[in-house]
Length: 277
Ligand code: NDP
Image 1: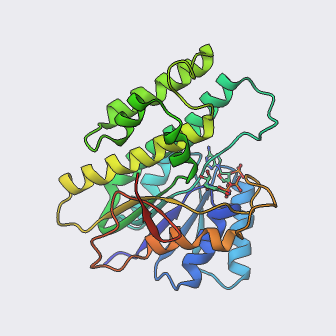
Image 2: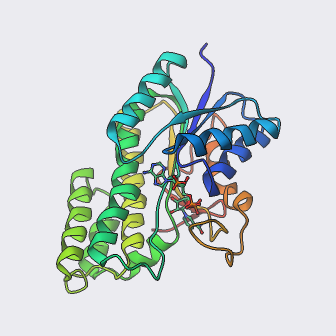
């Protein structure tokens, strides 16, 4: 049987690196592919993991915004492992509160990474998922706050259990177009680019889980969105209450759900608890 393998995106620092360490500390029995868009930073993180005694951590480059990069990773996994057991879509960006880029630009850039990047990596790697695989999309509690600030019509669309991926992609595109025009609030969108991209990640996870249940029924694959909590990283700053190690707890818990588990699936999970969408 092929060796087990887990992939973590955006893992050169922050929560992603803590997830790699958390999987190692939990005794993950396969290889862990630490991916990063910057090869030097990724290799340095792998050296750090190895110097901590975790020799099953390997580097592969992955820029989630570059579909050819995801395709290269797919080929590497197929050749060396013949499948994929854990995928943690962690990579993400957020503009700082004092960023000077126009809101429309922030919306486009954030959406490209957080939503489209997560979708592209999923499309490239899902065909490799083995039975009992675990997929975790790192979203945020901010997605739920942003949902509450959408118009009732948009909220109904995002909560619709039958929403299609196509419809969701259309809505994410509409938000960016409205943000660029400056009429996003008039059209019922919240004032947050990051929060809206994370609505996209949470709803995408619900759709992916539903489709997985339909197309791979009986394979025992579990797929969830999660929130790591408010975590001290370059993204969130040093005032956040959780350490990266604490932020990694929920994603690691979801990645290691035991083989016979049937839930959670298609949920938004934080502090290891399912939260209603
Ligand atoms: P960091 O900014 O510390 O790390 C983000 C990671 O994502 C970095 O490794 C970064 O790489 C990587 N990344 C960004 N864009 C790309 C890309 N195009 N391709 C590959 N990797 C990329 O943030 P956090 O660790 O705090 O965040 C991790 C995840 O957790 C994000 O999805 C974030 O939205 C989410 N989150 C964080 C919270 C917090 O309080 N920190 C709260 C809720 C959710 P590089 O170093 O090259 O920039």
